Image (tube, rainbow over all chains, first blue to last red; front, side, top):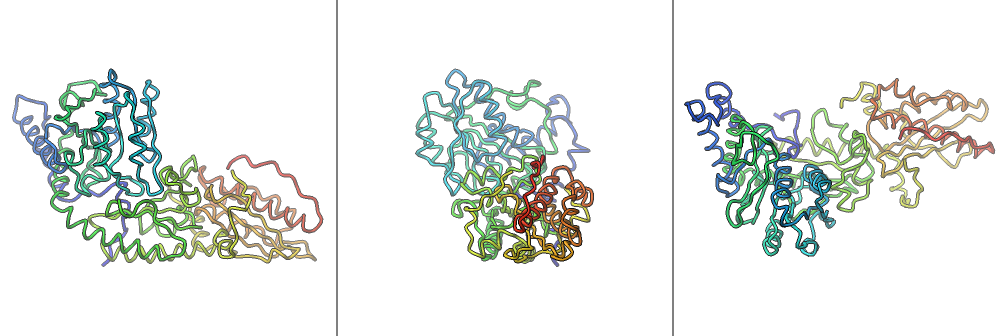
Length: 405
Length: 139
């Protein structure tokens, strides 16, 4: 039996694994203590649970538990890392290097830093979505304090050359922060092998609960510090005040443990399904995979179906199948995805894109059904697309004078 | 954002999708929007030489569901109207009929522009003066 509705938007969020929920439940009721209450068993129990989760989280990324700062999620982690480094290392410099395909939580934080007197370089990416390492190195100045480059992109799943980036960062004595929201729990990430100094990630992208995440902050070689961005009780080694979200942290820990155990077998199965989906859908005429296929997460595929508009396309099956589009017809700006545009895609191709994000609970029947529905809708919409008709008649659409809004 | 029943109806079962012979003198074609903006509408009318009424209307649209629904509805409304009556179709009538939310008003504007462009094309082909319209406000 095929399970409906079909959820293929796992880069947006994932369902909580039932095993995660089971682990969390006692911490809402019986073990509700505040982990900072040092003087009674309620507090001890909570603290013990947090310590255990901290170990589970650290283990997944090859870190020491003391290097894990719990946060409310990756957006907070991005803010704390970038602003925290900017404030802490102000005497050393004020220059940050990032890329124009980063998540808004990084880009907007960098904009904020610029307003506070920082200087930010936004690297362009190559057509496959990867940054140019030579350009990165050439951009470093004596004032550079931080390189902020994501591990895996949220829209196209492309993996940046993290190890090469960290080598460059080390060579120049610059800290390296990576937003690894999409990568941790999905592929092997090891902060030591990868040479990462700070790394943000979150529970809800890896079958854990929403509202909890972590910032990894390196303690040795080099010892990294960030200035806290929230004042209060001095929790999390003074870097992130606020009562710890014990049930969330417990769930996050459990989610990390499960990812560690099941990543390999999950990936084998999921990437086979992703390849089946992608190979079938790119058999449709004029359909293109966006971003590098070689350096990419195993569960993501971003495809443009030329001459049909993404939102119109989703409408054909969104009662049954949840995906996401780089078209921005619903947003007030009507601007299509800046990530796809950064790859050099025309706005028309960006408007025509769909992102498929598979997950732990995706089945082959669901993928077969998706292939069928998407193919059918693309064909149906092309029959009513004036652009498709022009293409079929061999018209050069670049020569038409469009009435731009 | 949920779509209205009427938008879903036109999307699932669009009326008058197709192409009229634009080499014919009594066929007017309007092509509006741009691929970069995510919406392109082509709307065509065929005018009966004797009665002066629009006897057929066809569209093809690249766009979201609301854009498809707006153009499908426009072709339905055009059929049987005189060219002058057709000029009175206002984008807000489309908004109301389809319950379009504010972010989708531009779809109705595009449909109104397509109607006007088709009528102008028809007029020019038949030796009449092009009508100057005030440029639309919302896009």
